[in-house]
Length: 46
Image 1: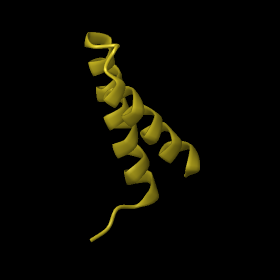
Image 2 (image 1 turned 30 degrees about the vertical axis):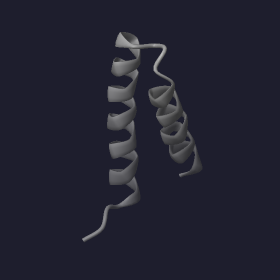
Image 3 (image 1 turned 120 degrees about the vertical axis):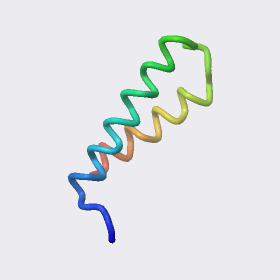
Image 4 (image 1 turned 180 degrees about the vertical axis):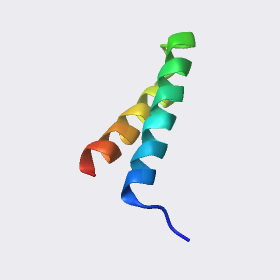
């Protein structure tokens, strides 16, 4: 059973919200910054 496009976008938005919260705690975390960029580009591609 797969996800619909809307469900996938919701998942990406939820993940981005968590990444943004984590970046508030550790703004210098390069891995989190890269992950955020990847997720944002995935959301823009949809």
